[in-house]
Image (cartoon, rainbow, N blue to C red; front, side, top):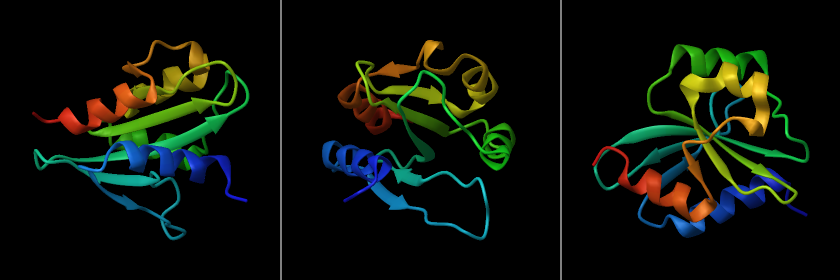
Length: 123
């Protein structure tokens, strides 16, 4: 049975066929986001996928460091396994996200809307 994050990745990939995704399975550089995206506007960006049962999102110190060091074109896509929708956050807001969890106002709300946002990034 696939993990919730793997299922989430497949959902995102299915709704964004025009984006070239690279799943990063990196054990050599801790904190590297899960995905590298490249859209039709020639724009590269990274996405950290998070699936949670609570309103809080757990990040490793390495993930926090990555987003603090790379605040541009880095994103966190969070999915709550309850009634809450998928939410997109800019990586530059990671410390606010650590403090506020899913109560923080997202950049985008809903999987389709977030997929469209990535598709139009850099236009």
